[in-house]
Length: 271
Image (cartoon, rainbow, N blue to C red; front, side, top):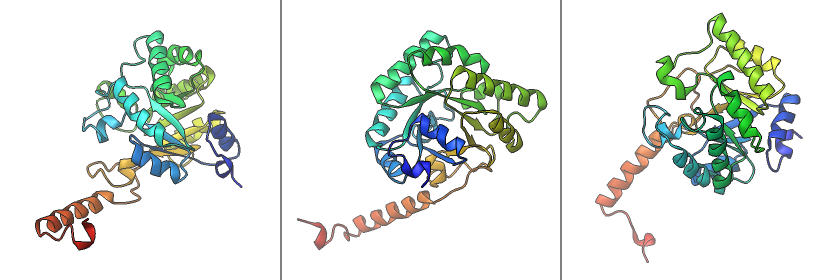
């Protein structure tokens, strides 16, 4: 029996055990009660209430506009649905970069108001003070390195990060610093697979990849992307496991036809 199958409730300790035993960690995003309940019921290990809600739920071009209040609302909806998975909540842009007290206050709000189990924030050595301050309150922190979408205006593109030696060395240094600061896990986004493999082997904490190759300790995707609900996002790393966008389109069109032809509701569908 695997560690994941034995876990009635996934914790940060569960993830550490899974890394130790070489058992892959599964993680997906969710932003609402209905889908979170399905994802949790299917047996996912970690649900990320991602600031990607800014894109897939609110229609923004970047993750920058989403607020702390928005994130708390989405996390409240998700937490009500979850029985087993570890729920990690993204700290949005502006909620932790200013100073460590602001970071702690934001993290405390997330934990108190949502019932989430951990927070995630982007950045390396530059956010270490915020991470340490958050952890003084006993709040678990997940790191995020590589492509950090909240910094998109700094980099200008969503291309692969850490391809050059200098940036790769910095990523390794940042990862070690995050581990030493007490992070229980780190997400690597859109970095070379060989670099992700090297850094994963250098760390004792689990790594979760998105566009970072197969050798991270786990993988994460945006739920709406892997289900085929979003149609205009097709990076190399994305595998679509369903085409719900097409199914929804056909269902709605059939509903329109049935209503306009008075076929719905029929004799069996009325009181």
